Amino acid sequence: MYCTKCGIQLKDGSKFCHKCGARYEEPADVGTDAGSSDGNTSDITAEEPAYDSSETPYDDYDKYFASVDDPVDKGKRKYYIVGAIAVAALVFLICFCNTNTFKRLFYKPADYYSYVEKRNARKNLEQLGGWLEAAGMDGSKDKASGREESLELNMSDDILDAMSDAFGVDADFLKKINITGKSAFYGDLYSGNLNLSLGSEQIIALNAITDSENDEVYLRIPELSDDYLKFNVGDVESLMGGSKKSGKTFDKDDPLAYANMIGKLPKAAKLVKIANRYSDIVFDNIDDVKRSGRTSLEMGGVEQKCWVLTVKLDYRDLKKLGETISSEFEDDKDAESVIRELAESVDMDEDDAWEEAVKAVDDLTDILADFAGTKMKVYVDSKGRVIAREIEAGEDGEVTVTYGRTIHGREFGALIDVDIDGESYTVEGSGRKSGEMYSGDFTLGGTDIDSIGFTLNSFDHKSFNKQKINGEVSIKAGDIMDAFDIDYPGISLIEDYLAVISVKAKDTKAYEIGFKLADAKSEPLSCTYAFKDTGASKISIPDDAILVEKASDLKGYLEDADFDRVEGNLERAGVPESITRYFSYIQRLSDYIDYLDMFY
Image (cartoon, rainbow, N blue to C red; front, side):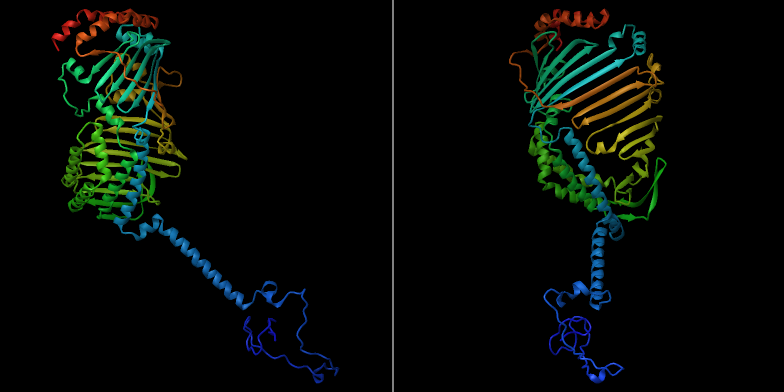
């Protein structure tokens, strides 16, 4: 039996079609008296249609003969539509929940503030870590490192003439000054070589090696002698009239101790990890936050739409914050590791250093109390990025700081304003951006500074985020002179020129920093400093050096030194005799050097 509507085969005895749902009706028998109107009869029977194997079977009906008004297909389409809408809604909700808009609308102000600040802190700390790594805090303290450097100074005839008139000596030999150097650092050893040239003439060189582990310095001037002079830092201080040091304590004025510390600083990644942890603690413990509606912020004449989060720090919050940080710090193994590394680098007792650090953090609660009453406005754009801040530190706002940057289309504005007890300093300006390239005009002013205008040319912000600086700043030389009351003989010659400072980075390990005075027609003065980091060569301590413990130890060295060679170099470079003759006075010092020990 078959359905009379859709034709599908039914089970015997079925009352309804399981496919289309139509009621099954027995086909009517057609006899001779049910014929045509003319009385003719027909042999018509309700036999099953015959199909051979080549025809499409009824089981493929849906594929080949389904109609648009099929009630089952309509139902399925409804389910498909509803399902698609549900999936789309779910995807939208997931995406929406991850957006700043969702957090702004549904988080408490304090929660949203914490989210914004943590995100901002992580970004800034990541960039800071990159800069620290570029500066050498990349875990390479046990590896050899080196650097090649050069400094070139060029002066025009007008500048040289002015200097000659001012100092009463022919200054033409200063037309081109070039200083080149190489340095290397490994562990406790440092070596450096400097070479001075005037024009194309090599004048003098200096070779230095320091051993910070033993507080020793080795110096050699190849033009004078092939011998190295060996100095102990304590002996030098005694020689110069100070008291000889005993033991190893860190002195920030001691270059050897400072170099040793720099070479053993902790990895930047470890410092960033610790800083992120404590920034999270800070922002999780700030509860007094209010959120405003959408507003406009103007800096440098450029407006940007944003939201404002107003934060207030009271004594109770600061006390809780100090106690939380103190509790965390005491058990912080990462922080302890850093403190111990720093102590080792300056030869301090590691246990004492850690105890002092813990005590200092314990005192943090009292220190933070001084900031009770501090208010801060944090301006946040539609993507949850902090674009500006206004800070009033302390109950009476003795210190106020405002800084930020606004963007509208291709225009940007920037402001930095600091006021400390009535003395203010401000940098403000605006300009245009093309992609990540910024150019603009700014003014610098303050309580004790006359307003100075300067121009920022083609600053590459993207490059900056990758630990490279590319850009140029120009300012009128006369404005600098007026602002800082600079008045030297002949200096008026340069007051109408632009002073231009440029920085170009080939990569994070190679820079060229330039300074020049220039106008459209001339360039009276230019100075270029360039450096690139290289692999270090082997550093060896000289086996045979002249030990200098007192002034008389220099007598034999001075008697044998080849001062005539240096004088010849100076003469060929055009240095006036009135200057070169002083070298003969130094050589004569050997005749009187025995008397120096009577005074020291």
